[in-house]
Length: 91
Image 1 (cartoon, rainbow, N blue to C red):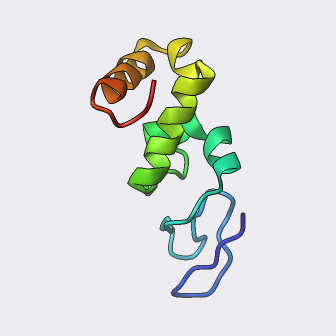
Image 2: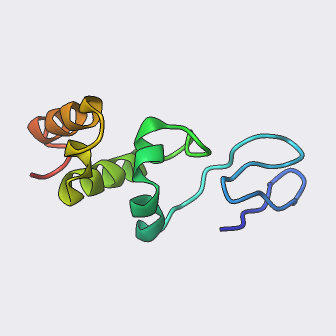
């Protein structure tokens, strides 16, 4: 996904970083991108530091629904369980 920097109109890399300003731009991710990068999104790293709350919830829902949250490190399953209890994601 190529995104342009609003300041320099330069292309950003696949992680949303502007090679000139070294900043990350908010982007609207597709469902496919959210699913493919769910772990990075919920951890807030690797270019996914500025995701929206909606994208975070979609990523957590995918991790729960796919079962990935329960085979990764314990933090993922504990977080998913808490989000279900809070009604943020569905069981």
